[in-house]
Image 1: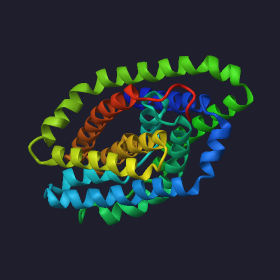
Image 2: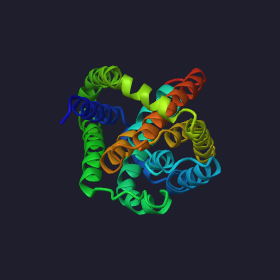
Image 3: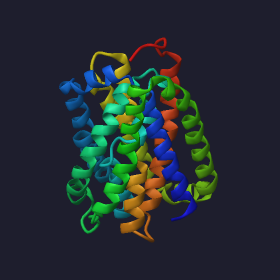
Image 4: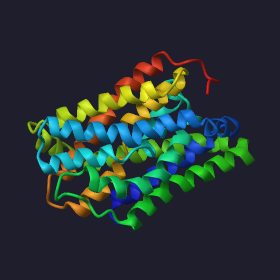
Amino acid sequence: MSPVKIIALVVLVSLMFGAGLQVNRANLIALLKDWWLLARAIIANFIIVPVLGVLLVRAFRLSDDVATGVLLMAIAPGGLGVIMSGGRKHGGSLDLAVSLALIFGLLSFITIPITAPLVLPAGEAANIPAGRLISILLFQVVPLLLGTFVAYRAPAVAERLARPFTLITYLGMLVILVIVGPKIWASITTVYGSRGMLTELTLIVLSLITGYLAGGPLREHRRTLSLGTAVRVFALALAISTAQFPGTDVTAAVLTYFVLQVLVSLVVGAIYGRTAQPAGAT
């Protein structure tokens, strides 16, 4: 396993475990019982965004490789992105973000092998390796559940551990960015000019709007779901692209999408953060 993959796993585990440490168990259980909110979130992420992706890649007449990269991101919702983008820092609900991360992670294991052959361009359908999906799922869900358990059984310990795990997460992300920065830049220059970047940016903005509208009457839910819907599971799409489409522009499209969604989520998250409710909101 390469150093980048090892560091990425450390980041994933530390982020999910750290998020679990901060969860309010009562709020989490209440949100898991809000079936209508969760149903809207599932429809937005598993149906509307993939459909928008298909319509956009056709409207912009992308090459099969770039279209495949865009659609791999479109069919991979939730997980890490929901936790990072949708919490209290951005005026959202961390408890809802955790709920969505759990549900999206579990559902993605079922939906991605089904939706990939349906939405990818003809001849580009990926054979999604079940082992890869299971491993990514385990690295997301298990640490999240463990962190939530610690927060419930030993809240004082959870409070002391939250900051160190946050530090590990951000340091790891910084190291990854330094290592893969040149590759990301090369990917952007590859996709630029193919209308791929415009397609991806349009899909990200439409995903933001879709999630916001699906969030319901509570502002923190709208903000969490808007950012959580816009930010897709980069690690999963990248794993599929590198394994199933080596030597093509599929990976370049995935990396470019990742950069764009990070930039958009940072801008929107900053706006949300400036108007966030005082601490104590869900």
